[in-house]
Length: 312
Image 1 (cartoon, rainbow, N blue to C red):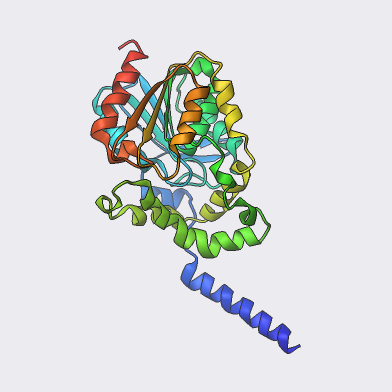
Image 2: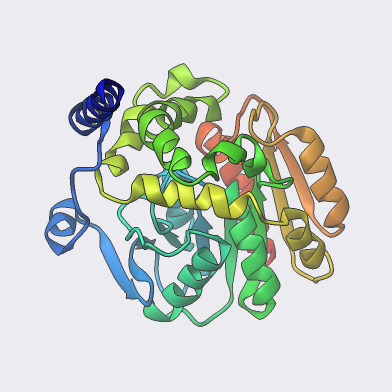
């Protein structure tokens, strides 16, 4: 009986520590909080989507899809530059990230594909557009292009996930309850925010990056969404998406930061072999998000590519 009370006390103590000192998810995303946050929101079948649209309706449209955990602000320099260069630009937060809803459904590839499919008519977008995907967003953009090639003027993949990097350490996270515990006590409060700086070749140039990332973590459902994505994507045959894409006649651009610690040069070489019709640029002195770290280099590449493939 003594051991039982000790175990119960330990669990209670751990729960108190977690609740009062570790848990960051205190707020709900609803109409009241969103009115204070500002921004634009669209209602879709699976939930509310936070988005930003810039530029004039008659300009070529570029849609930006972010990666695994950092929401749409990761496109700040790209969004501003393209709007100023006479493009219409849409960026949005994937479900579970930023200020978009956190659906309790599996945060898998299907959910993210359906999110974009539903967002387009909600925003009255019907003409073909240029699609850009970063990291995990590259998988989403590639699969969308495979399913809807008639909607795509061009496809750009920036440091895209190629081989399934989600399988790494996924064994423990896939275990019921233990995965939730690891996410709550280790990954969400510590590892995820700190890992954001590794996306840069020069992280000291972006001292507020981790704090900016934490802002989305105060809304309920963030941990659950991220864990669900890891579990779902760890079972995904990523290369099959690109093999199907490689059979299509779509103008493609691939960019990689040469100091990327997430996506290896070997993976990009594999991707380039699968996608024979593409343009490639290696961005020197840049990490996993070269468009953010080296916008003066990347933005002209993007603009020239979009103009070439939209008749401008």
